[in-house]
Length: 405
Ligand code: SF4
Image (cartoon, rainbow, N blue to C red; front, side, top):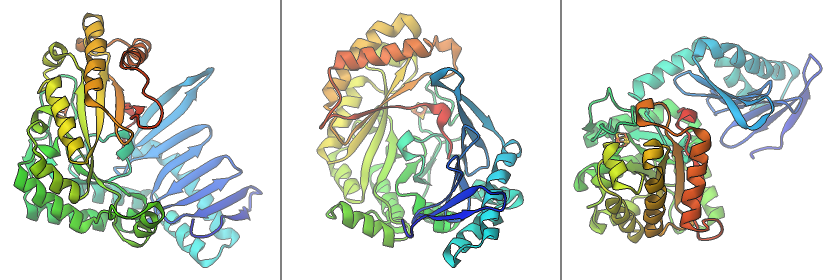
């Protein structure tokens, strides 16, 4: 925190607190409504009237609200900028009232940026975003606030039956010059708000399928513009380094499918790690090769195990994603048994992530439904043995309906 929170009384009698964080500005009114803005004044998370709203840079908003009487269940609603305008205007009104109440210079400057981001300014900003990014299809949940650099566009495979993220995008790898131009545009677009984004995600899907030499060259371009914190620093020094390094990031992350990644040798993975590649996300989906073939997923579970082993040997962490519910009851027993077996062979450690993602949509893939998916996840974890505690991977939910960039 750069300065202690500042509390003022608004002209309507409510108490408002302003927190000037190094990465964001937070306005809290009556301990109920909490609005968070990046340093350019763009709203990104708002808690108002019992709902949580996340705003994407393209202007859409995702509203989440607990379902009455069902603590674990939430209503989810994606709205466009026009429908979300009322919420944003109300939040911006609180910032305006704080300005009118009189605040010191630094606080005034932050609040003026928030107030300036009215409907037309946010629409213009969304148009700038669209000019910089073709389409950010999906990210792992821990990377929603990363800086995305599109080293590739689309997915090199683009044929898994459960995945629609890149259907309309032709796959291509950018040249170094194209990535350098994209990188400059990304830095320019985010500006000071880069303080909020401490990871670098090399997109799109499957970016690590790029050929060895080109991959290293593209990583060099990316990390020249977004330098990675030196690995030798301790936790406090890392924070200090990130605080004083504009565009500095904690590491580079990317997706790869098991088929494309399986032959990556340490010869190329080690330079990637030295350039800051920290974690690679692999859609295992299932340990059952019959189910994978049925889903048109490239590669085999053995490829995924080999890939994880190569990444670990090079000092790179992994995030492994398991798809719940695909193939319905027909595949369920083998999916549980063989997925647990394969995950066990991966020897996931404390820096790795294990995500469970419930199949959404695609009724032709015979999804199981939420309760059965929960049971499937529990069964995989039980079969795998205890996965909590030190030295064990973090286990989390990957809900693609929650993704916004
Ligand atoms: S490899 Fe990944 S991104 Fe490509 S189609 Fe399959 S699931 Fe989608």
